[in-house]
Image (cartoon, rainbow, N blue to C red):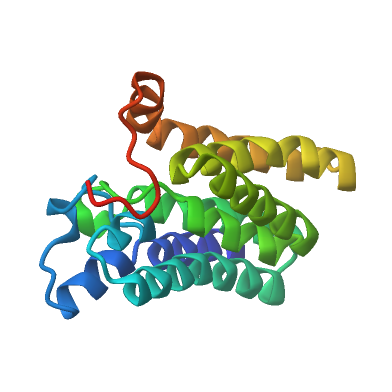
Amino acid sequence: MVYAIITALAYLLGSIPFGLVLCKLAGYGDIREIGSGNIGATNVLRTGNKPLAVLTLILDSGKGAVAVLLAYYFADFNAAMLAAFAVLLGHLYPVWLKFKGGKGVATTLGTLIALKWPLGLIACGIWLTSAIIFRYSSLSALIAVGATPAIAHYIYNDANLSGLCAMIAAFVYLKHRENIKRLFAGQEPKIGKKK
């Protein structure tokens, strides 16, 4: 029963579309009609408002971290892992937006930092390094998230944690399928470029 409640609350927390709400409050209208149509920080950056993009990044990652930390506080690490997956699903498929949400990168990084901070920080470092080298947010995310199952296995040798990372990576890759097509076609916009 506790796990069911944690899962439901984590999903609902993940479903809060901060990018959409912030852009409407800032007078940019519906962020889904700008750039890539995504509700995440990278697309918010395409409005030209960097502080708003940073705030979106903080809130999207923060909701992932909060869901995990609360689950761990009120239950255990297994509940925290369940909350990590549920909050991500909420962000990817929010009930309020007809299950059409973001791509989950910031939320994933927030959950990983809260679950196992070394794993989360390594993933952030991989993203940042890849972004500096390649200048593609999507590619950086795919590299960072894709590396987490192996990193988790190497550091913790925990099959459940590695499995969670693999499931998260699968969903993030699924949500990035159009980005992957554009990357192969050489049509993916670089970081900071208005689409």
